[in-house]
Amino acid sequence: MLDEIDSKLITALQENAQLTSQELAERLGLSASQAARRRQRLEGQGVIKGYRAELSAAELGLGVQAFVQVQLTSHAPAHSTSFNKLIKSQPEIVSAWTMTGDADLLLRIYSRDLTTLNDLIHNILLPHGAVGRVHSQIVMSQIKQDAPLPA
Amino acid sequence: MLDEIDSKLITALQENAQLTSQELAERLGLSASQAARRRQRLEGQGVIKGYRAELSAAELGLGVQAFVQVQLTSHAPAHSTSFNKLIKSQPEIVSAWTMTGDADLLLRIYSRDLTTLNDLIHNILLPHGAVGRVHSQIVMSQIKQDAPLPA
DNA sequence: GGTGAAATCTACCTAGG
DNA sequence: CCTAGGTAGATTTCACC
Image 1 (spheres, helix red, strand yellow):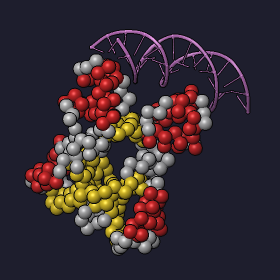
Image 2 (cartoon, each protein chain N blue to C red):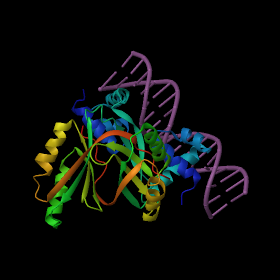
Image 3 (cartoon, protein in one colour):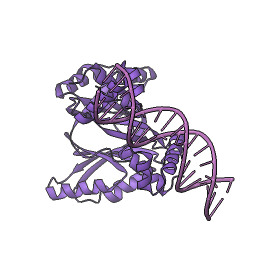
Image 4 (cartoon, rainbow over the protein chains, first blue to last red):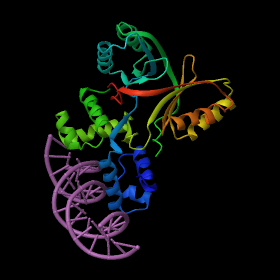
């Protein structure tokens, strides 16, 4: 479905979504019109879902990154939906996944500082009826980040 | 440093980096030239780090997402650097962080299927000298994903 | 906030396997 | 018939006013 040129194209656009058709064409060994056509095809197929600005958390004053594992005491639909709403209402929680294994949920959080993070955990997450054990880990450093998806 | 309009601007560009100055201006209640000027300023300040294409993992045939916690047996520099190289050499590992707490590292992985993921864990990660305990959790579903950074 | 030159995109056309 | 390259009108950007 995706040939070698498509792979190079999506890798290039993951690094820099603002490449012009001409610049893309040079990297791919194609003409600008062909590069544009391939990009349109990949957008239409849904391989490329969209283009997003990447921000600097540090510049936004978000000094603390954390992953928080949340074990739910109840899996009743009412509890789940109300907890999901809680998660969606908190802008600091940027991603949330349900997981296999001993923890039910994994939350990815960006906070201003440790105090703000602890507030979120102790005053917002833990008081919720469905929340059991919470285990938080702070990110110390990033070894590898935002690598392109393997194409 | 960032006013209300800047916040709206970066939220809009996180949703769609391809908005034209004119479209941005309409959302912000500004003229196109002012919207473009603000965007340039935020790019220059480093608040906006860049623009990236977002791909569909499913369309790329990456059916399994996982988070793997890795405990290192040794923190000797030689072991760390060789393990970091290993991580960077594996395209399936898209992100890696060092963490506080009982696990030293957290890896985010996109794999074709469970077999491929298990190959990576058992034939590549575990044989490495510095690797102790490994605990992997598969992503079942996403409750919240790729929310804009709180501005 | 506005303007115009320069760059870019996109739809259409032609050529070749 | 499908894929590649070229072209012109429309759109967008960006330096300057």
